[in-house]
Length: 419
Image (cartoon, rainbow, N blue to C red):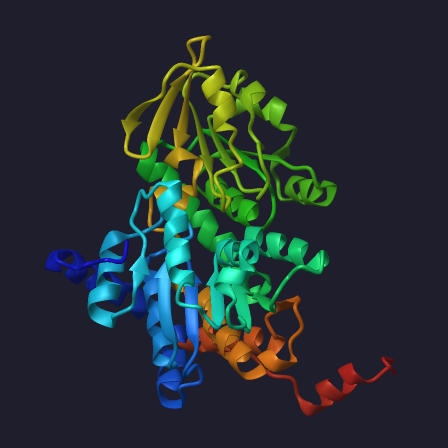
């Protein structure tokens, strides 16, 4: 639904929370100032499928300041902050098609509503806009889509698969691949917000608990780092020998999930793959095991398999469903197996989303200027944008760094590296 704002309190509360996020996003603030002057996005229609949070609201302000017409839907049925959505509609006039807790049918109806505007550019978190367009290009590409951006690892994987089959219909910039995104957002953002979601949902003490992490990419590294900092005993499950070796060198136990299932008190999936924790693993778990997902889609935990070996679940706390196995042991699924950091908490802190969404805003500008030269491929964020964002972030934090001297630059550019 597009918010018909009748509850002034709801939109007012959202406005205050957006202000708090804006105050912690100085890089986007600098971009907004320039966009307001230069209007580099003037005339563009931008369709956005992102988590409807306070940080996303700040990004929407920046895109609109750049001259674009923008509309927004959610990229997860449980991630919408309704007060934020209401504020965007009332205070900025941005159409928002989302409501927290929407069912799957409503979720896709909202995606279709955003695409009905016939956008020039898409901005995705999970590639659902691109996927929907490609399923019915005759309906959604009555005029060319000139480009798009993708926020997360799972979406980039989907889009690269499409590009490898020569089926991608317009160029995409993989925002997730920018160093100022995945090195910080995925690691520090996911690490903190995942544990925040788990603790908010369960009030579980992590100190002394065994926390099993499935997947040791940047998100898994972040969760492991934060769990270790809270005095949990961390176990990592991996299929990639290099990542598994890295986890060992980082000081964690590494083992197959069937072995970890017996030991774990809390389980977190961050792989982007399907059925990582299955019914044969649930059967091995301790009574009271807690299982959460922080990957983009709700496919990593085999909840269908869990239902086959348990009675009817009951909601025992907000975002906590209790499944009682035939053995009598109980397993707790958090947030319906969806992104726990958004289902039960507020997502990544604004301070780190500042860099991620700066990449989104500047990649949008790059597409506006360069789309005629781009092929139907998935591109990395240009280095100049990536490094420029890092420089702005350091400046906003009052941190200065060294620069190379002319002599040092000459030395590094020379093939004669003698003493």
